[in-house]
Amino acid sequence: MIQSDSIRRILPRAIKNQDDAVVDQCLEFDREFTAVVMDILPFPNDLLDNPNAVRWVLDWRDRIRSSWSTPDDEQKAYLHAIWGLYWDGQLLPVAGAGISKPAGFPLWGELTKDCLLYARRHAEPEDVQQVVTAFDQLNSKDYTDAQLKEATDAFVTAARGKASIWLQNLLQTYYKRLPGLWAPVAPTRLHDRLAALHHAARPSITGGPVGLGGPGIRGIVTYNFDQMLELAMTNRRCGVEVFFSKQGAPVSLLQGDIQGDYPFPIVHAHGFIPMQSEPVRPEGWIRRPDVLPAQHADSEETIRLHDVVFSQSSYKVLYANADGVPKLVHKEILGRAGSLFIGCSLKDDAVLNELLEAKEQSPLNTHFAVFQDESHVLDDFGEYRKARDHFLHYGIRPFFIKDHDDLPILLDGLRKQGAAYIRKCRLAGGG
Image (cartoon, rainbow, N blue to C red; front, side, top):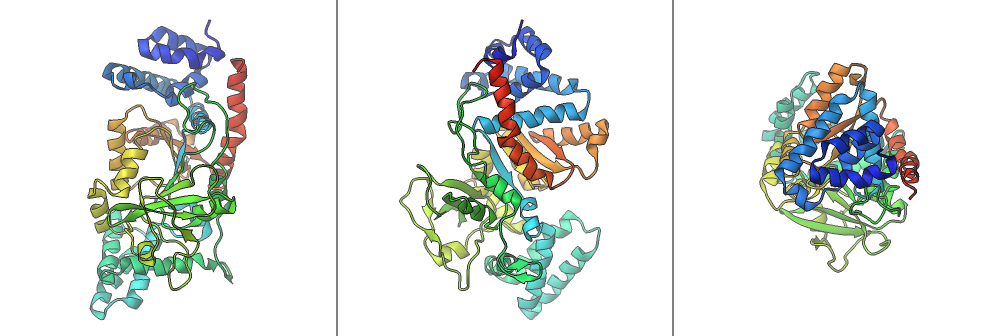
């Protein structure tokens, strides 16, 4: 009879031998834990090189997925898989604009409108009309994604080569904005909860290779320009190394005191605009000897004039560059198991295409995304399956929460409830 203590030991052998009977026995004893292990198990290279074995694993995942009787059953298994990835040191959060919105930073549409207002004040007279036209289109309630992308290009055109500087100046106003006050913004509870995940030390749940020698996150990838994550990490006395792109090449900056052998990596895939006093100076940022493969920024111009992926045209340029940071992020980082998208709408065609490419390259990798259940898809199993299957097409398992305030609770659960769940699994095995 299969026991919980042996599921994580025998499943790798069953997968190697494509033994349906053993997987059936594991599912009969503990369907949820078997589903979790099948989802996050680190697969050996010889299996990954075997198309038949890969297809066999994917077929079993589909079979398990179709067996859940309610969305809650499947969502619970997804949550436990996220916990398992964290406790194996395999989890990589990918943060979008939604995590910084509570701190006063706008989403893309709101930022574009603010950029157009800034451009209307600073553009040359002959460029003002196209800016006004783009702004009026975005002021309508039913503007399209195409109109939004055209509006970003209108801003860049009006900036005449100064778009990065205009964005830098505009973002400084967000850094100083608090309701009723003129004071720097501070990281939110969500930023702090992400920062709190950066270290711990326990053995692996799956018995496979350990990412960090225990629980913790490998780093953070963000599509945001702002510095809130860096501030949250340094508030916890953790040194960070910030990666972004300048002229298509990776550049890094170091902030704070290094804890351990390496600083904590934060990758800004679409550019980085730190909080600075005027004039812009790299105060608080220091050089260090090359340890990771990137050039270290040490000048005012390197910080100010970097590659910002904001407009439709800049997307096309940077995503077409095989050596640029966005392509490296999606190829090298999303090509590994364990990403958790937070605060990302995942509607952008460029990002979705990269995810699809990563899925085709590494079909067994496991990625999750947290979404607010605004349309109440969990209340309708048919709608849930429709939403789930849309994201599964891109290799993403969607995890739905009822309210944005549940996000910090979810992240706390990685360390707290996750610890209890992993401990329960280990106690069952006597380890």
